[in-house]
Length: 232
Image (cartoon, rainbow, N blue to C red; front, side, top):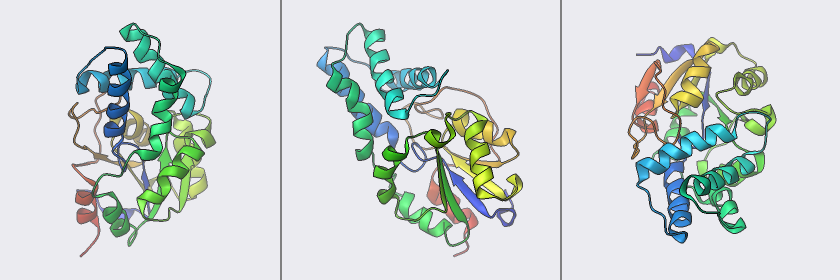
């Protein structure tokens, strides 16, 4: 068990960890596929999503809205159809409707009793602005891929976060649902990590690239983390 007295700040991935992005992703992509007479199960869609998103985030930086549009186009290429412009835009436009996990707001409020909270997210500033009111707390800092000009697992995002937080890495605990995007790069910079292994059709992986990693702590929900480190 981690010694939570070590930590002053908790940094959080947002989409997947605080927000149930898989529900939003699947709803949108099932609709696009069905419009072209295509079908795929949830596991297949999530696997392709993880691969397509990682591909779109390679190379020269482009905004997350464009990354999500690229994901839709790649689904079309993989399945043999050309999505309409409206369908291409539908995934990033749906992000504002993606909802928090049921335990997110209560757990964040509990954790804020003991720690400063920071967002470290692969997203555009304007897209996160639509999500922010749903999270129910004020964050000490919000660090985005847009600000860093790079996407996790790039260390640039975490390095920017650490520079703005202004405390040593050993005083920061990073919390994320993605081993690929969060646990591995955060640990490489000396941050302790919590893997929030949220429920998923693709158990233990979700909508990201599959990798092996060794987080310092694994929990099944944010509520479990709050119960572990915030006294009653």
